[in-house]
Length: 307
Ligand code: HSE
Image (cartoon, rainbow, N blue to C red; front, side, top):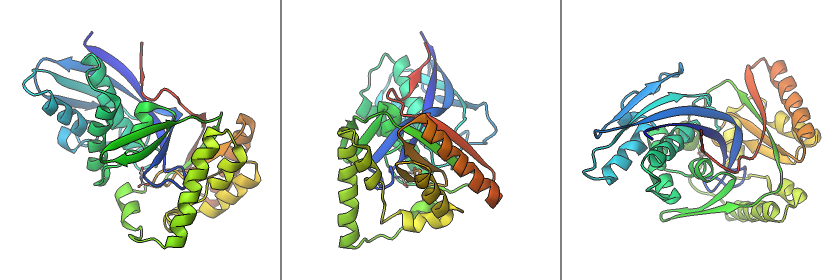
């Protein structure tokens, strides 16, 4: 077996209050990747989409983690030829770079007979995030590799915890403007007020407790971000209206997906999630901004290997 096809899913980082520490894996959309094992130490990349991502592996979010993996394999003469068909648009805020990085390392590990552990794969894949945004963060990578909802308590050393959760339906709207994660991080204040920090860590603890206790009302109350959202929401036309109108339509709550511009909402049923989608569509139609919407659910498996 020296070829594999995988599906690498989109993810929602931060989950509103948990900047850089919480993330959720989605059923849709997914990138599709095919990988061949080579008998010499190199990484070859092909792209089957129109996104013009860097072909030099060291500059590519999928390539850099593979180079790091080869480095760790020492003298062994193996390499990877990877074809990427992206369906998750770069700069959309639903973990496009993480899907490339996580998908590549899961595929490579599969071809190598699963020699590396999940934390090892997260460690390699974070190098892809560094290429994409200049900073290592695992709140897209970890849910993409582990599936479900993950808490990244620490990245040095890595400490990843999967959080059990009740059924959730997720609506995402991606207004077709690009927000680069590096820019969306640059504009953040480097210091926070103690009163805001207290509110924020109360919300993070409340959200995790709400997931674990299947307490939808607590989940809804805890989907509040007093630190990042007030700054980043200025980059997203219609943000406040979308948020307020979706909650009025029955969503538990939601906010910016990752570093934006996508906005996500959590709901208790698919029917509510569909009504929320209509609310989002009406608002962006009126604003006159093109968009994509997704109504999906939590993917508990993460990157999937095609059998
Ligand atoms: N936690 C990161 C950020 C996720 O918000 O900058 C980026 O996808």
